[in-house]
Length: 411
Image (cartoon, rainbow, N blue to C red):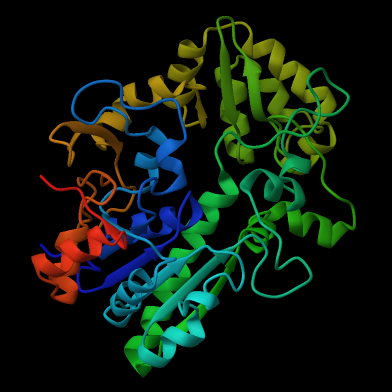
């Protein structure tokens, strides 16, 4: 069966994470994603490690690069050379989508900005990903995930409460601002494709990490706008639901996620404390939140009486949401992770070996994704793409490579 975007070509001028995360999703959905990389070094993340693949033909590939570049074709072109720029312009003429994350205006001097390329390809959907967007007083600033998590408010609500040991601002354990920006870029691209189907028009998409981070504050942002009071860090507790946090069991920890009053009644029954559900201070969630400082220590004392495994078995039987706190190794050992095939253990790699990968979370009933293609080696597809898309012959490719405009990996 044909993947949903197999009729589209994407010219990927992005690197690191936000842009590559978006184009990886497009590649999973079947798009022909041509990743333009710098000859010699390629995407910055090729050198971001350890860890690197340690053994076999694929040794030296970084885990970071492999996380965001599955299914793409690597074409190494020197964008600073006149011939290299000409090649990219020719590829843009034959592409449906272009994704870039250069500084605002950074591609204009190469003739690779939206205004220039839209004249030769009016249907081009051109997605620019920057730290702060194309407009505003911060437009020229570089934007990195860590600083965006701080500036965009996420770190003000992440971490233990200031008054407790270990309290203070904390970034998320993965680059959430980058990941969420990549996802929002993909959403915008799909929306622009729908518009183009009706009108034939391409357009410029302006996607900013800062905008995405602020929008992704969700209920926390609206809590401020409604109340006028900024939410604060609450550790693992929830601002508006109780009990909904991490509790210590007799041998570890348990996440208890009581989302409604019925679940609280069932929790109290499993805990052997049905009187708590009848207590007027705790009967409904609004009152449980108001009496959090009384109820939470009571629940903590109860949870300490059994092991994590015992609690999970008892609470799941009563349909009370709960779960363990897994290491990443334990995640892939979960029966659900195995049943859903969330790990691709051995993707065939251009080196002749294999590399591991994580499966795409996208599941289509009629147009399944293709997430079984390993990330490319630097310049692995230079000759194949320039021949297939631009019709260059071996002599032309040899001349380009001899002149330093391109780099390929032969054999």
